[in-house]
Length: 382
Image 1 (cartoon, rainbow, N blue to C red):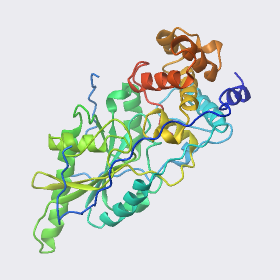
Image 2 (tube, helix red, strand yellow):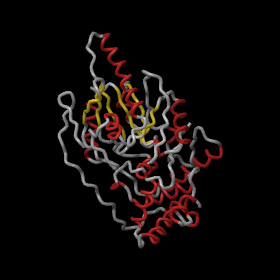
Image 3 (spheres, helix red, strand yellow):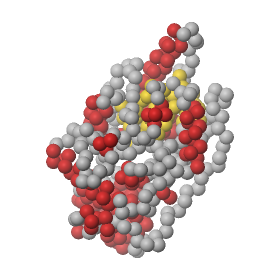
Image 4 (cartoon, helix red, strand yellow):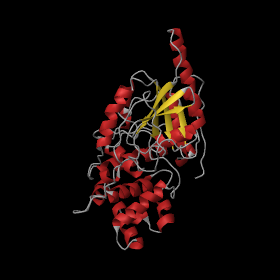
């Protein structure tokens, strides 16, 4: 189908109501550690972890690679792929970029994120090491463009959470990508605890480095302070709860649950700062914004659910590892016979008496639950 036809098929119809707003939690006063410690009560997994040398300083990439930015004509490059698959990913991204240009921009910056960003910058003065958590399905889209400038020279650990939601080929591609940059990465599953033991060992090994420097200066050793940061709903609080082996921080599978900074203690050597998800004030990369919506890493009120579902259908049809067969097997509708938006409408007539929003939610929920299989929506750029 021509790009112009895809773009036209995804234009939102006039007068569509926005999605319902989520209720915000009550505001509470934040008191930084050490003055008080606030500890509110609050799939078969495939464990694959890239081995890291002990006491190795772990770094994260500085924002999104320039080669990742969407460009006219789909000028993308992908690592660890054959030439045919590389072209398929490049064509997929080019089509997505053209189609998304026709949609209402996705923007979400609630008040608690602005407050958190200010408080986090203040707390960075106390933090020795930063644990940045990203969604393994979209590692580039969940990389904050300003994170590197905020963190400076602090020790950093990169965690790709939800590794059980991607394929082995995806894990290998991302492990190779970060290894080529000299970056050690921990693949984790915060729900089941996979990767958390390695993350704990790595964080404590960094504690030894910090206290060795303190001893040289004649200072007494102290627990190392680690800040856990990342986009909304990437699993920061779940990872902390798994590290602590008890539910110390509230966690739920939706963005915006954590609304204040909280310090919790991990043994005698480490203190962890759980922070709310942070996003840029304006998301300039709308392809990344749509992927955040597909993966439920951004608030529902920021996007039109039928637009996002139509983009997901288009992505599944063109995905090198999935294709239209997955959609047919699930819904018994030939996706190749219709535009992506028409597919969503056909499903609404088949299951929900013409309610397009219900059919759109069904498609998004099925993807999030792995009904089409487990796979990433991004592959690494060269």
